[in-house]
Length: 148
Image (cartoon, rainbow, N blue to C red; front, side):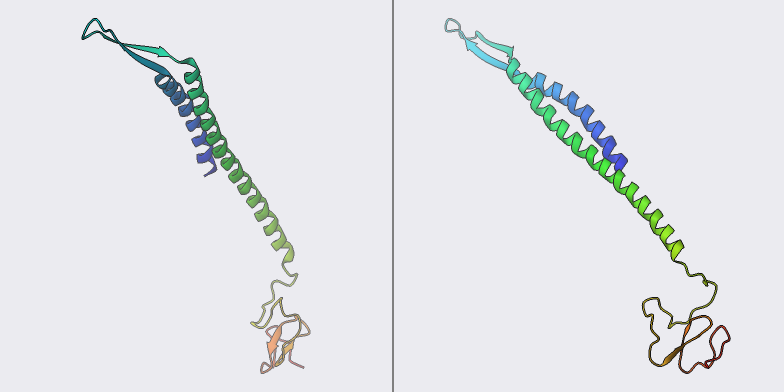
């Protein structure tokens, strides 16, 4: 999406400059019609360039084109920075997850084991060897240690 915004801003900029020249050249002309009283069919149309209006039209359109181009390019830059920060955050998060792994990760945990509950819930017991919380009706832990 970021590349689309940046490329679109360049395309709109180029087409906007070309369109500004065309509109200013077409709309910057003044026409005046004069008719002669001596003849019935002698009407003349005079087209003259109004330079103030031509330059004004060109500048007004260029300001609009520049604003749109800057907005689109800025959106592309913002999206690029968000993607970069997201990549950094993912790297930090994955490094943090690697550090959080327990030293005894090869031992199996029972369903009652939880990082949230540090205390042993009622109706269960904690193995002294592996630290697994087991149900009260279990006589031995999954590591093989007995209840007592």
